[in-house]
Amino acid sequence: MDADADQQQAEFEREMPLPLRVVKAAFDVLLSHSELLCYFAMVLNAVVTGSLLSIVYPVLAFLWAMLSSPRPSKSFWVFAITYTEVCAFDIVIFFIFSVYYA
Image (cartoon, rainbow, N blue to C red):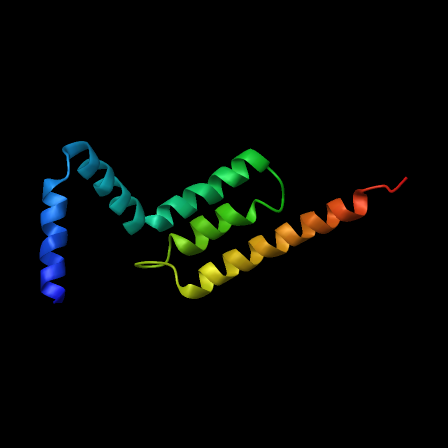
């Protein structure tokens, strides 16, 4: 049953138009190298924001993630996500207390 479904999937992909196959291939490459997209977003955030809070991201990307082989460990991603949540919570609290009620 599973081999039949795989055969139908392969046949469907062969019959797709070339531009759609190229888009699908580009999407598959993006998924297989998603950590590079994350590193780029970390560096872009530091460049655009330019604050002390955002400088942690390129340090994480260059000094921890890219030195890990073959990929960063789960603890790296947990730390990066936790740091992002703490920063977002800090910004939300700052805006809540900076609103003046008249």
